[in-house]
Length: 149
Image 1 (cartoon, one colour):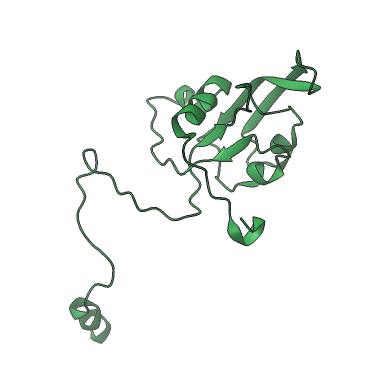
Image 2 (cartoon, one colour):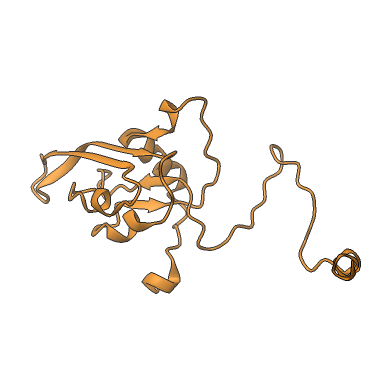
């Protein structure tokens, strides 16, 4: 009873305003929030992935599937012809992001992940590149305790 009364009459320390969600969205998110994946492009507009399979190997949920092929460009050996992430199976741990040697895959601060069916939640290469085009202005913040940046 004492605990209940203490919490009931204590002044709220944080902002408890009601947000009408579809029309209004909260802008404040945690700095190291990990949301929807994106596949980055290089400075020439190509997919930055070199199909090294390190993210697929590092993923504890086994939700990343890559098929590589010989690259038509002279500056890399391979590139992904297929790059799929099952967003429903992913645990958003960030291991794929840490394992990537060229920073081709990143977790964005985007939190609206909606789909009508399971097939819509499997993001292929084109869908991941569309997420990059939508969020290229914002740089996802990596976990500062691990990476230092």
